[in-house]
Image (tube, rainbow, N blue to C red):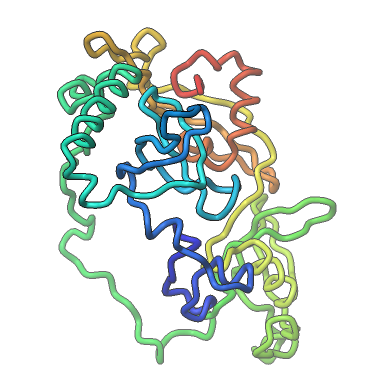
Length: 321
């Protein structure tokens, strides 16, 4: 959906992302003409003469990367999902036709019998993950005092500098190491060494950087800028490359294996939860941090799955995919 919707980003100049990538006007017919779960008639090739091949079904979504552009994903009365390019919506006359009304009622009964009764809000009330949590409000820890922000005219040259105070991964020998830019390297006259430039690549000034091991060393501004741009996305958010998963911990409120299924009458479903689990990540700069399993499953699903199998955790609810 997002690839066919215009966004406020100036980089796409009012166009939709799909148009910018493909160079052709995006076709939204497959999205705009059919709403989710609408009644449709589609061509069922399994039906032979003299019965009509056009049968009743429910529209689910466009069929991405399957068949022509207008191919739809349709669910049949027996619960089977098929992909069909010959699909049309029921007209208002057909919707009010008594024969079609009875046919839709029979379709719903047969589909419910095939899939089972749908879960209700009451069925999910026993699930601890169901519902939006209500958290207590909190107050800012200011003790009633407003932090003092110095006027820019009275600040030193490094206070509002675009480099000083920045954290960046920099090359140290044959590896990358995180560091903080602490100040510009200055000469005896108090002026920074090198020549400033509006183009970061041409900026030859020298910065003092404090590395994660405590060592303070010098790097040129253009080297720092190059690594900043290489480690940030288009929105300016920094990212790190993961090296390995090295440890895990399970907190007391995590769901146990014995409680992983919720029973609702004659049906049961597995709780989809990752709460209470954290994994220790070793990054490429040799630093380690504890991260939520929910985040890592989305960003590194293969690495998480391999770690779970290697550690014998694949039976635990968060890893039982």
